[in-house]
Image (cartoon, rainbow, N blue to C red):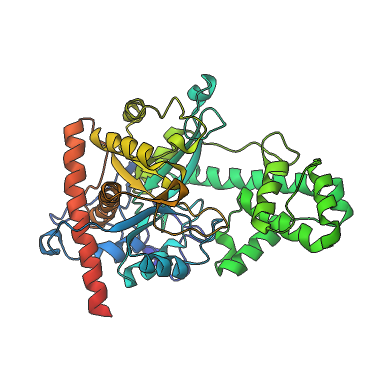
Length: 468
């Protein structure tokens, strides 16, 4: 099958395996017999850029056509549109665990937003579909808006002006990365790897650690994560939290318990209390005292621009979604508040979807903000990230574990259904969700796609019941 891939694709280890699981017939055709295209690569004028990869084709393209999907109803279900699956850092041990917890918590749509590598999305899709759960494939990208940095404006990072997190929803082209976006994708991966390697070098250069023969390597950390998460080592791209975890493990193994407190105080150059018992808290302290800006092992982050991130996301077949912080910071950033200001800022950038991590937010603040964004014609979703070592429920909740209201559950259900419908439509060779300049058109598109998404979820559940 590899031989059948068009020249518009670059095959990368960890993206298409030796069995050739990458859906890319040489010339895809629509019902009318005309080629289905997402666009053309100017460097390859005769190459078609495919709309879907094998994973999305098998999961959604194999479902019935729209006219025979189950009828929609008014039922509202629970969703989580943003988690990080292994090998990303977090509290989810495996895809199987994620799906098991989703079933236990009656979550009907589960979305992943992994960094750097998407090999895990195939087993995620298979396991979710077998459980009657609709998978949503996403991405999270760290960017820098130089104009906002120059004007000292905070966006959705509470400390760094111009730092701009951007998410993508409904990816359909992650089995094989299209050549026209490959440079952006490689730039992110290579830049982040260089940064982590530079941080490791700075950690290893600390005299106190050298004296205790505590030395880290990228290769060893990645291998340990791959073994723990049961994934290929080639799919592991280290994050800052991975370094803190590895350093904590090495220090606690090398330093006797009775000497650990004094050791950490000397390492951190502090006189106050330090954590020696709770390993998660100890890892967070290591990040704070060694890896954060201004500390001994800090290295500047590598950024791409928001425009490059949008190009990457749409090139992967998805649509751009802005992750909202609001009261998750000490003060709402000027970019994000009030909600009408954020709406105008995003509309200028042709971003038509937003998402929240409700654990950051007060219920009243989240409700008012989310309702306003929906009134402006934005798709609204929510998730939990699960990017911390401590397990929390998959069902999103607000600050102090305040349950979401029925109103918010319905709003987030609608947003997740849009993402499901987008993947289905792309798999059927049709146009999915996209930015529209007119509010009335945006709202109509959301309503139509959400209704379709409900029918797709019901179809996935029906297929699962027939196969069980």
